[in-house]
Image 1 (spheres, rainbow, N blue to C red):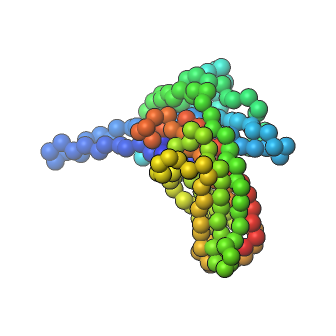
Image 2: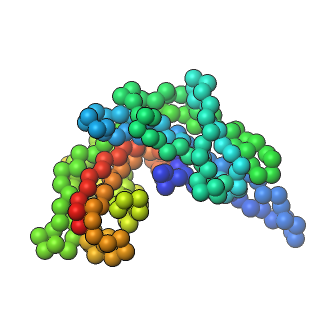
Image 3: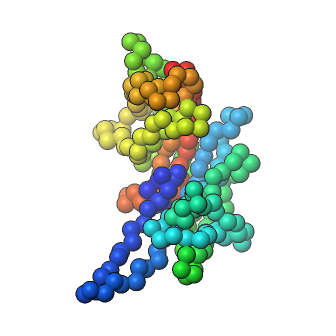
Length: 231
């Protein structure tokens, strides 16, 4: 899968020039499907499929057809035409993993060209992190989130929300220690979170990332755990 924005993936598009003539820009996109796991309200681990299609060329629409033949349209992010995805809701999750196999994406570009892309979903998943602590430091100027390492996870991301506003985003980072630590923690200055958003309830969403390969471009699976704190 591509580098996650959430979830979004990036493909490079080459623009060519021949002499003084401007060459035709080639339509190109990247398409990815991966499994997302969360804990539901009953504490069970549930799964869904997440789709992401990105292009530097503007697309009119993108549809995805699953291995069982079901086709659905993806959402055009902010109507920009560059990023299409599905935003899972509670009803999309199940205690069984999504259908594995080849997913087919039909991207319709603004110039009328239609191109098909595929990505294979395997059965691999990662469990949501067990967040063991989310607390202020003794002097009250920082907040620390601690969690048990996720088996097989390649990297982690952290997003902090206050209501619907994102106040902090930590891009993917890895545990580079040898041997790997059994638990990890990350600290943030409280003033950096509250300076623009004010005080109140903050939601810390920790995401584990499992990539398809060591090129770390396409995702195979992610998992998310959320815990809240008053700051």
